[in-house]
Length: 512
Image (tube, rainbow, N blue to C red):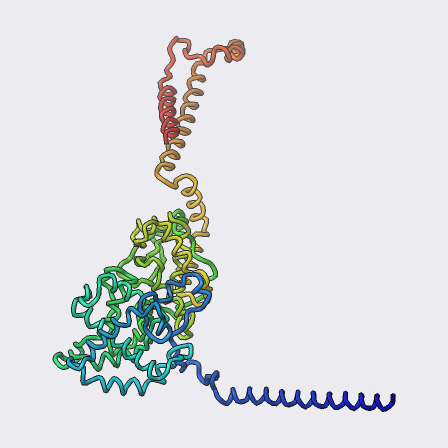
């Protein structure tokens, strides 16, 4: 028995020793792996401000609300949707545009080698512009960048030649679809790649004066800006030397073109509440005015007609895309990119507060602020209220904080609250307003008739003694107020006239 116990104890000690050493070995491996990860620097960024990433995957919280607004259904640009089976039909079209731009028989055939060299040198830099790691091989990535970039450059040149009308090489249904999907966040190419391909194939510089050649950003803005404002004559001008419209890609360029020019030491501030609906503001005495001379995000709120009234100036908003693709993708970019302020997001939340019903949409449309082609006002209301789903507003970076806080403060004033209550209950429409005025007139003439009756009764009772008055008081329920005086004649025209007017006002109220 003693021998067996000694053997068991020795076995247990040996097992514990082996487990201890294996644990040390695992700990050592774990530490080595973590050290190697730090040394590799794969997930370490020394300076976040120099991180070139600007093309992102749309966050899942926004993608779940309206996936069709972010995912292309016809054409793929860039690596995120490259090779998708349902997008292969457009690959042949892109190849045709590539051949037209760099074909050996064309004027740019000799520039192809230079394009090859540029893309090979900038491949690593171009890959860094995308948030996710690109799994394409070097050859696949370079081919994709060249074909997609050539397609975009040649398309813009064709649009410029035909004054942005119908492109001969595209079917009529293609251009609106291509424009809508080229502005998606996941369908972008780095701007420096497009700019270089555009410069290599720019044939206008040889036959024109300096500064008069075509401008890639100007052509892109003219192509994409109608997505925000249809038939607008206020397309922002873009000079190649200026840095105002920087644009890492087309979506960022379009966003930069509508940024408001803010003044003051603190152009952005805290906005803790949504603005009141346009119906409530109108009832409180705020005049809504459409201002076509301003940029789309340039909204103001100020005094009108003295101390009591206020005016809200809003540039017109055009909604001609049934899913709000442009504004959704700009908002997604603002949520992902650290270097940009959420101005478009703030703008959309502003409209989300203004619009709570189809009546609000109808009022903004009547004022010329909101234009749409969605069929009915309820669809627009639903679209505006749904755009901000899955997005949290940064209330401390609102460029509209003065407008919203000022409008809400005015709405909370004594005059505005009393005026809103009066309008809401008694003047919601012209029918209710006429009924209210008729009721007030009926009440006025009823009081006037009563006063005339009291005056007539006083005149009729002047010649009565106390005993006669006492008798008349008992006879009053049967006989009524005497209609004649001691002379036998009593003037009751005033009471009859008031009675007739009162009856007419009551008929008007009942009819309305």
